[in-house]
Length: 361
Ligand SMILES: *[C@@H]1O[C@H](CO)[C@@H](O)[C@H](O)[C@H]1NC(C)=O
Ligand SMILES: *[C@@H]1O[C@H](CO)[C@@H](O)[C@H](O)[C@H]1NC(C)=O
Image 1 (cartoon, rainbow, N blue to C red):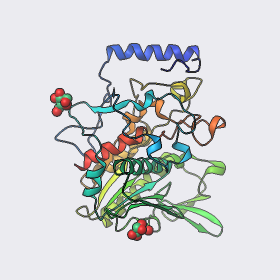
Image 2: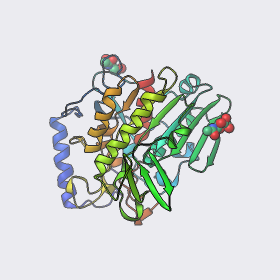
Image 3: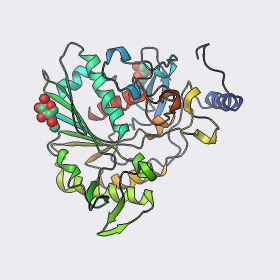
Image 4: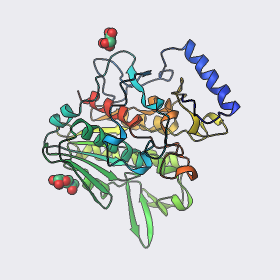
């Protein structure tokens, strides 16, 4: 912790003290403690790469923000004035095996001529951008092109013929304008899925926008089994939508051609553990991730019967430990915003991509 850290509130100091103490008893950070069904999870020789601990390692981060000129302001914490860098100095160590470091050159040669698409909300954007940074910093001389057309961002390495795309789609199922209302169609991905076809690898995510109400709610009315609903239990709606998405996978995806991943729910740390302050002053990983969140449980339930086709990128618990990795006041909102949802880059999504790479090996 830098000597210039802001003063910590007493409650925080006490909580941190307790966590540090806990860490003495519990040296290897545990991510189990919940029944961990191996739902469609890619395993490396019987090892669950998502169970393990964060280990301090001075050879990280794998790139500097100055090596990635296209980081969005919202994630560019150091450029926005964050001066502590302890949060960059951890690597993920699975409990029962080792994962190799991310190898950008290897990644690009493996995906030569292929198209990869991230589909989802801004957490998906976070991971897409992390991947493009990791690849660009691995081959800084290779030309790249970044094009945005509407909700699609297309990052390409022409010399490798690799496209890495991000399709913004917060809910995955369709939202269609009808009679001047935005209708959330829980039974349909017909419109959304047009951009998914022909991809060689797809990485999906959705969750956070299911919770929005009022002005931020991205629909006006919900249609489910041909009936219109003014509102609905959001977790239930989320589950229906995931099942609709899953039927698309079952009926339309050829697993020999297309690899499908689903990014586990990315945890946020607003008012974490009932403490009266946000993620801002945290400088170290936590020790215990707590129980799995409800949407994560729902996601696992939906993916389980599809285990052969969809790999769950189970980043929930390992990210839950990283309260120190959020932009807090070093995102695009600055000191008026407090972002305990997204992640700084370089940062935690780099580990998600390292594990994505490991799961492909
Ligand atoms: C992981 O790597 C370490 C250090 O190189 C080694 O000591 C250990 O045996 C490896 N573990 C496994 C499960 O391969
Ligand atoms: C992305 O860009 C590449 C290279 O310019 C192009 O071949 C590809 O069709 C683009 N993908 C989409 C979906 O527009």
